[in-house]
Length: 77
Image (cartoon, rainbow, N blue to C red; front, side, top):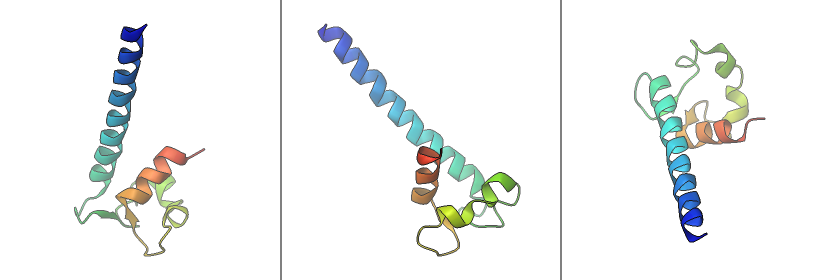
């Protein structure tokens, strides 16, 4: 039983780390100018993402931070 619990915890930890890495990789791929934010122009090749930029931009600075992007990816319905 203890081995099962340890294996489960290990798999959960790995999956959370993989998700975080995947989000960062997606963000970095879209962040063409590498300034740490996504602009409307950078999302122009992704119309389905560009349409939602106003929803994600919680601080209304007209750009998407990694935190805002992560929130979108992990909370979308």
